[in-house]
Image 1: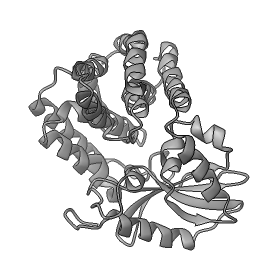
Image 2: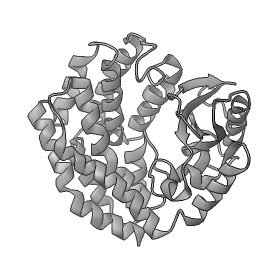
Image 3: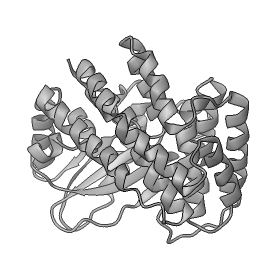
Length: 327
């Protein structure tokens, strides 16, 4: 799919369905679409920097994630999850949003359709919304135990993902799509619509990017693009599909689109994530990542511990905003 190619969500889902039709694993229960391709209407255009998340449900041993690859020109991101009862899915901030949309691609015996119907019926219930928010808040609380002795890439990933989770608490509380790369931009929209724009500035401040200019973020992104294009391709690495040339439109081009739209601060967290993932394939890009961390006030283990502690300390205010959004 090229930029401006105009593939719509319905066509992208259909391509995913054709791939699923030729793919079976032991214990296959069914498959469904999650992420933005599940939340958008079929007639909408699939954003250039989006993939189609395909979740394969299995009853038994869960295979390793397949990750990103192209099928019929559409970038798919395929993973596996175990078959769970509706109550477990409803309490999961990762599983409930996709299951609530009911975009089923394959269903062996009707169990997946029944599960999705049960999740959709209860998805908006405040008790389940609170349960999903609580699961995210528990992961934020774990930042108090951040191990700053980890190697640089692992330390950054252990910090930056939980540090970004307040945005997902906002989106979960508002019953919105808890998107991945665009989580700060999506949270910004939700908070602005509810008259809570000031809290978005707080979230950016916790990450350390509230003060960064568009020019500075674009500079970091240019350095990331050079690292991304030159990083050794480790076909056995944990992020091999996220760092593949086929995924560049998501990791680099989609981030540049945010920067060019003036959402440069909202793009910073994904720049940090991608830098760290590149570094897991070798030492290439370590200096550029350290420069970004210096800008975020997280350039030393002690400074990163301080950033982590600030996110934990902000939980009471986050919970007040959460309750406002749920209400």
